[in-house]
Amino acid sequence: MELKQFNFLFLYQETFALTKRLFIQLKRRPSTLVAGILQPIIWLFLFGALFSNAPKDFLPGVDSYGNFLGAGLIVFTAFSGALNSGLPLMFDREFGFLNRLLVAPLTSRLSIVLSSFLYITILSFIQSIAIMFISYLLGYGFPEFFGLGIVFATLILLVLFVTSISLCLAFILPGHIELIALIFVVNLPLLFASTALAPISFMPAWLGWIASFNPLTFAIEPIRVSYTSSINLDFIALHAPYGDLTCRNCISLLFILTISSLIVINPLLNKKLN
Amino acid sequence: MNYIQIKNLSKRYFDVNALENINIKISKGSLFGLLGPNGAGKTTLLKILATLISPDDGKVEINEIDLVKKPRQIRELIGYVAQEISLDKILTGRELLDFQADLYHIPKTKKLQRIQDLIIKLDMEDWIDRKCGTYSGGMKRRIDLAAGLLHLPKVLILDEPTVGLDIESRNIIWDLLKNLKDDGMTIILSSHYLNEIDYLADTVVIINDGKVIDQGNPNYLKSKLGGERISLKVREFSSPEESEKVKEILNKIDGIRQIVINSAQGYSLNFIAEKEKDFLTKLKVELAFSKFEIFSLTQSQPSLDDVYLQATGKTLQDAEIFMAGKRDLKKESKQSMR
Image (tube, rainbow over all chains, first blue to last red; front, side, top):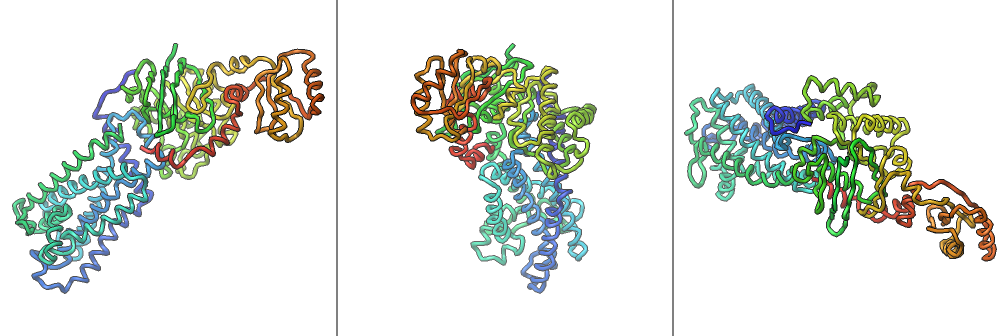
């Protein structure tokens, strides 16, 4: 029998199969996708209405609160989706389906991780486009071509960063109950401790410091400024207590965080998957 | 030719020896049976062979390839059908097989044909396009088996494949296994069903408490016991004390050996009697002398259960009951999670 070596075609074949499985699940149980689009739209309506009479100087660089909120909701939706990405893997672990994958002569078990990244990234893009489109219909504008590039690049980095952590947790925690509990604990506090709902200038000093180190903020601010027509990478995106950060700074910080998280979880994934 | 060689294999889970110094050789194209009660170590051994867990000690070679050093090459050779059937209930059977085929890098040109062949072979046409979540136990097992066979493995590893199945599904699986063996596939089958191993296996290993207690051809193991298998009752349901007294009497009779009290059958006494024409008379006289009468006495050919009984002092059924009380299934489930 001819024994196969590492082969990119095989990597493609197995990654495609694993991703296709996740999309078949999504197609037959679309509630995750629907909820992921509905929830931020409800937030957009309710929070948009709640702060519609906020004083002009409360919101730096934007015309209305709905305009300000859109970026926060796009990031929050992608973040929540990525945080939940460990759940299918956890269920596969619990129900023994993971063994079916581990017994197979996968050319690289990286395909298991890669398929989760791909799935969540595509899902986040679909949800983000839906949010951006609804925002546009509500009169909150739409990013130009370069701005869209920044939105998607930022989302890819955020999704990679959070998905890697979620997959890691799916291997460390004993079961899905613990993973869901952890997601509940982390999700909303991270949102409130970011610039998704309010600018740093509106926050008490201590919260401003926390928000200016929150990875969500590094994703939210470049997306927020991507709605500006004169956007470029050196545009000041965040007035942090420790100094101003440009779009480039925010994306670079997110990039460093993503690479660091991948390096940190790599030994664990190797141990669990090999 | 020994296609699979297991040498001094050991595996521990914390303070429990799951496998202890296991030595097994399996010939190419044979159907190899692993017999033992639940918790004996069968699944641990099969999971090591399937590269799902690593042994603590010892060596395993399949087709002269070291399982620990080259697990991916081993995975190309084996098909594994686990004890717990794990299907994605959202996928249809056909989608699951298609998914499995991609994991084994089967080219598109061959994939559809192989899937169709297996659908026909395992009689799955009527329900293959239904979601796996709607399948009965027998259907699930058949689709699981098909998934294990898609890539035409050289070695098929099956962990208790017929537990809880209806007769139709069981017969289909038995027939398929016989055909696969005839086609030259090496099959390793674990079971705690004696008739299954007796019917299918060329060679059997009896495993208990993580140790191999006997191995060989089932007929050889049975004939090795010699004499005639006798099951004696002096009352329909004797007490343990009464059976002990009868055992003492039997011990004094020449030509009777390997006396075991079988608690699973109302504390009957199972033993081997040499074929002597006045044996029954001697037995009656000795029992009458101690004021016992024969309630029932049955003679039979030795079975694999007798082999197990002689080796461990317990019937397989007794061992099942004993192990069921001893096992911590929650802990085992956690240990088996990657």
